[in-house]
Length: 363
Image (tube, rainbow, N blue to C red; front, top):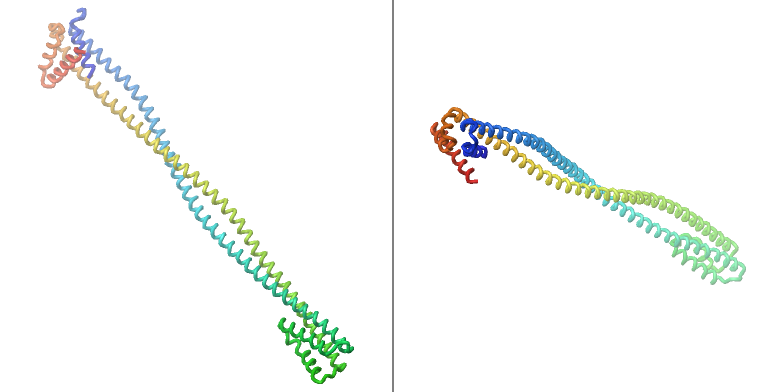
């Protein structure tokens, strides 16, 4: 309502002006000038408000887009992180299973290797027993020849054959020596050593040699076969272990990659969250500011409209009583009193104008 105060100042100043025009005409001119000033002020405010609206639209649109971009980034990062975490958990479980399988296979290799070593030890013992028996057979043939030539006694023959029987018992094949033992028992009974008996002993020793040699050959062939089977099985298991080791390396690298992805997505989530909060706050601030612009414009426009309406009514009042105002000579008290007589509303407006005029005069 500052323009009303200016009207009152005009009222107070009319009487002091050079009287080239009548006081009433000068007052009407001043009211018209104020109305024009208010309308110019409104035009300027309209231009400012247009710029504010455009800037508000740009700022609100930009901040909304920034908030939506942050929300979209947050949603994508959360989804990516969730998938990466699920894949990480699955890959970690796979890695544990692979390590378990590898340990089982390594235990199996250790088991079959231990069993193979045990069988090799047993094989060597058997080979040693057979070779010892073959050596004793060679010695027996020699002592039998000496006995036949009377260069060795029956006691020496008996002693050597006892060693053979002890070795056979140790080797677990004493039954093979039963025929030979029968001949020796027969010799010890009658004390006669015939050519047939000597030949019989030689034949039995030769049969024993052939049996032991055949057993040694069979034992060796079987051992070689067992070695081949063991080695083939071990190689197959080792190949699987090697494959599992490679899978472990791939899983470990994959898990590390997934962890890096999770960390990256967490950084994006934190950044997007901060961006969303920051831009939401700026959006709220801009919205409040634009609302303030709207309120200011609406209130100011309404106030100016009322001021123009009041000034228009005042101008009409003055125009209708130009001669009366000419008689007042610019005394505002008489103007207010005359205007107030028009009715309650005019009385309130006149009181308001009088108050604004007094306040303005004190400044």
